[in-house]
Image (cartoon, rainbow, N blue to C red; front, top):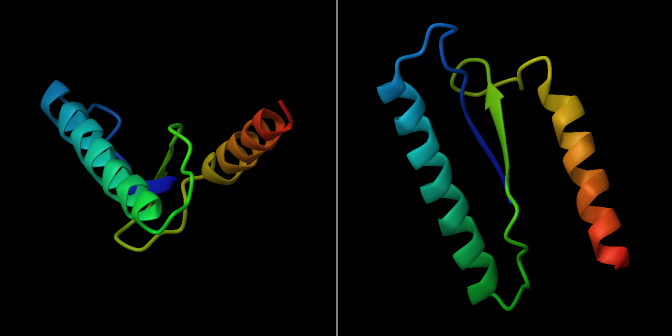
Length: 79
């Protein structure tokens, strides 16, 4: 599952960080459950990438994070 969330400010409070983590868990869980209900075998690992603004684009590191996540998932399928 690939989920996105607004980038947190540099000096984020613990409350802001915790809120972001809860959002990611909820969204990722919903997507995973939806995939499973359709008969797909969703892996448990999820990628959480921050976006700029409400609709993106991904933050500067987002594309590389996505590539790395994809490589790791593809390698895990070979096992």
